[in-house]
Length: 513
Image (tube, rainbow, N blue to C red; front, side, top):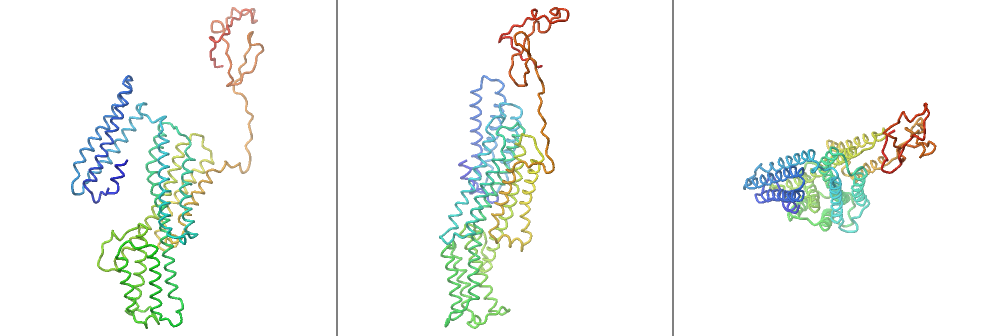
């Protein structure tokens, strides 16, 4: 696991690093060799049990062959990109299939009665816990001063944490049985791979929404200050051009002071736009027009470029960096516009995959619940299961709002993205904990239960016959010669003196009457 954590940051199939991919292959080889040692150790301990040797030996051979293949793949990585890494996934799938096949054939390799369900549940808990940690980390990033705690920010953070807790509660409430039949247990375990993948995307996307909202909040505040500068009355005796440029510069400086730019080019691009505004005549500021004149064009382009520069700086301060991934074209305005487009495209992508992942998480949790449920299904249970599926599908389809730019921007520019997810999962939690509703029009009549079988015990040793209810412990009688002897009946009358029954603990037998 440590090896995976070391290799993962530099793992990029589109830009392969030879040492990284070779290290990854060696890590896979070593992991399989360790499993060979583990199974070999078990074989030594169960050497007296012949039936266990064959399946365990097959597991040793399987992992040893896989280790040798991983070793061979190691030397295929060169200084150029190679598709040989695909063999890792093929081998992993084959190993999984053979492991499952062996477990179905031999009981010694079966998952029945193991802690597989507990292990999967703990992995789910780890993923949700990591999401909580990411949210807490983002809180320290977005809250730079006491004034950063706005009502909307508090609501978004609360909704993010509450959503993850509700998902955790739904998952464990729907986990009905720890031990399941073999086929159900395997299906339950296999469904956890897509479930954990969707859950990871969901918790990461939810934590990203907290950052996105804070960026939007700062941008809205910056935009309001600029708009106020346009519409505000100039102080008596002040020059409008000087006053406007000073107000603009102070507003931008306040943002840069609170969220310092990461790149020097941010200051350069901003100063370049500010210099263009300073170069305009004072007469233009006294009576600004939005016509097609050169001054109007320069003014509009400079204001737009300042906005995009500040937005890009905010994105970079919150670890959303598209500047490093964008090639500089030589034109500062064009470069900032391209970076700004990349940043907002990321926001739309996060919005889409988070809602799709949220819907898939709910649908898969519902499937896991259906698989693990061992009790009889009622009409109300079926209704709730279908409702869960429909709500999960609805969450996934919310992402289609991105196809309409106007509607998407109207919803995405509000702090209601995370509260929408939170309220949806809370509704699921409440509905699935409601008791079974009573009949609407009539009540079912209670049928008086009657004993299915009544056993009459009687005889010399037992006294008068007594009713024996099913399930009540009793000592059945043992008759002479295993049954009735006709010679012991006198003229059709039963002769008690000829009845021979030995009443002892050794003669008790379970007789199904």
